[in-house]
Length: 173
Length: 372
Image (cartoon, rainbow over all chains, first blue to last red; front, top):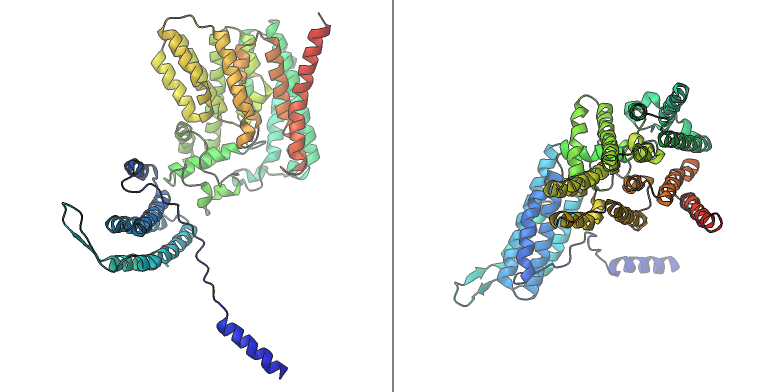
C-alpha cells in the first residue's frame, strides 16, 4: 500500500510539476540610440567606419552578429512603442546582418580557421533571437497599414516578416 | 683594461648561458636547448639571478666611474656598447618576460590570418602552435598600430625561420636602444650621460635581452624633442604622434610638446633642463599609476631613464634612479624563487621594489642634515 501511494505521488509529481524553460544564456545588448535621436546618425557613421576596421572574417563575424543583435533589440523597442514601420525596417537590418554573420563564418571555415566556438555562439544567438521574435509576435498586429502624413501608405505584414526572421535564425540552430 | 674587458665579456657570455636555462619546454624551436634547470631548481635560479644583477651593477658602477674620470676613451666606450649589444642579441628573450612572443603572435594574427588584432585574440586560433608558449594569448593587441606595423618586418623573416624573426625583432629594439644613446649625446655632448642610460643594467636586460618596445617609444619621444630643438615643428609633431602610436603612454608628454612648439613659434628661449625635469616627473607619475591597470613592470622604468640621463648633473635624481633600477630588477626574485604570482609573492615584490629607494631617500636626507 505504502509503495503504491509513493509511486502514485512520484508519477503525479513528474506529470504535473511545473516545467521551467531556462532562456538561453546568450545576452543581447541594451537598446542604443533610436531613430529620431540626434546620436542615431553618428551611430550609423560609426557602424560604417567599423565595417572596415573589423577586417578579417572572424572580426567580420563578430561585427555582423553584434549589429544583428543591436537591430533586433532596436526593432523590439520600436514595436513596443508602436513605431511599426521603423521596427519593421530595423528587423530587416537585423536579418541582413545575421545573414552576413553566417557568410563571414563560412568564409572563415574555408580559410581553415577554428570556428567551433563561433558556431556555438551563432547557435546561442539564433536561439535568443527566436525567443525574442516569438514574444514580438504577441505584441504586434498581424498586418498594419502605416499611413504617415503627406506620404504613401505602407502595408506591413508583420507576422510574415517575423516568421521569415524566425526561420532564418532556425537554420543556424 | 684588456683584462677588465675580458672579464666583462665573460660576464656577458655567462648572461647568455643563464638565459637559456629558462627556455620554455613548449618552445619547439629551441627544444634541444631545454634543460628545465631553472624551472625545476627555483632557489638556484633566484640566487644566480640575484648575483647576476649585483655583478651587472658592479660593472655599471665601474664603467661609469671610468667614463667620468676619462679612463675610458670614447672609442673604447663605443666598443663596450658594441660588444654588449652584439653578445646579448643572442640571449633567450623570454627569460623574465614573454612579451616578445606576444609581439610575434600579434603580428601573426594580422599578417598571416589577416584578422584585426584589436578585435581577434590569438587564443581564437586554437590550432596554432604559438599558443603553446605565448602567455596572455587571451588579450587583444595592447600596443599602438605603428608598433604592429613595425612587427611586420620581423614577420617577413618567418619564411626563413621563427628564430630569425625573433632575432630581427631584437635587432630592431637594439637599434632603438642605440638611437636613444645617440640622441642623449646630441643633447648633452657628454659621454657620461650616455653611459648612464646605455649601461644601466635594467635598460640592458629589458631592452637587449627581453626586447621590450618601450625603447622604441622613447627613441621617438627623444627624436621629437630633438627635432623641435632644431625648429622642425611639423616633423617633431609627426615623430611624437608616432611614439604614441607605438605605445599610448607617451601621450602624457603632449603638454610638453605643445609647450615646445609654442616656444619655437613665439621664438622664445627653451630651458631644456626644465623641460626634461617636467618630462621626467610626468613619466614617473604615469609609471606609478601602472598598478591601476595591472602592476609596476620593471621595463616601464625605461620611460623615465632617458630623462634621468639628460639630467645627469642632478645627483639626487641620478642616484635615486639607479637605486630604483636595482630594486626593480630585484623585483623578479620572488617570482623566480616561488614560481608563482600569488601568495606571498606580490607582497615580497613590493618590499623588494620600494625598500631600497626608501632607504636611499632616508639616507640622503640624513646625510644632507648632518654632513656638510
